[in-house]
View 1 (tube, rainbow, N blue to C red):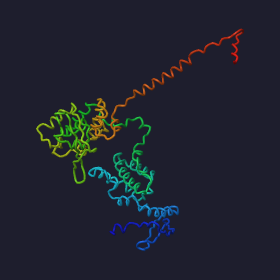
View 2: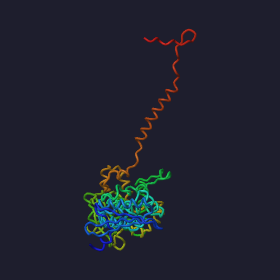
View 3: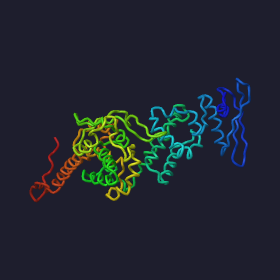
View 4: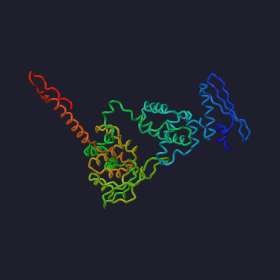
Length: 414
């Protein structure tokens, strides 16, 4: 048995009888459980300071259930994360996603919730934690990258039967999705992040060219290929095929542990994007006389262009504010290309392949809202109400009378 195993608090074996006692202290109640290990014949003890007797009884019941499951139900989130080691990272990209998730856990989740027993973490606790992050001004991306690993860790706790359901699932979506009355009037689709037209894109590219031509090329490539910054950085000259007029996106380059990392695209799929007319002059200049394995676009000194280097070199925030596009980010260029392709009438399933979306619903967000069916429904409803109004305006038929104005008697029943 190594030192780490010795430090783990003991769990009573199945079927042993617990001797329990309570000791009232100024700080609360010390709940103590003792039993004899049937294998070693040693007396083992487990104690915890709790606020009241009800909590003490819950502690004792958890110990008994821990013995049945073979998992300590009183373990804290921080301790449980160490126990399961890398289980929660299965299926994640180790060079980028895992790194971001680990940072979120270390800097935000564990300081906020790490001291709590996994079985005691509630949806309300998670909501309040997320709200406190929002109050500190953390971006939605940072919060999502903090909640996502928490969801995965608590999924493991569900599998271990420490908890019945995952209280963290959908919590970042709930918090970040809170909409005020003002928000309800705003366009929150990915289309809202796109540049309005090609003239504005050329204006942005021209402003970047004043710093260096490579930043202008970056802007045009990201927008007109609807590519991510890392995918633009990963492009090589040989990825441009002039025979088919297609650019193949097969890799991405982004910062990782120990430096830049080149790997598969986010969806791990190879994507083919048609060369649009406004991009042809840029690609012709970047490919002429160059070797296929060379990077298509590089920085002023031949280095890799990342979203951070473009931001810093161009003073991006000031630049886009001067162009009356203060909310435009580098990733907004991808939204721009996707929006324009959707407006051009590219079929939805083809656009999905170009963008590399796994879900068709994600791609559907770039379609222009079509209210024609709603207007047709309104026309039908209005015609229905107009017909009722016409009937109400018609005079009622006169009643036939006999003699001195008396109405005809009703016909006798037969």
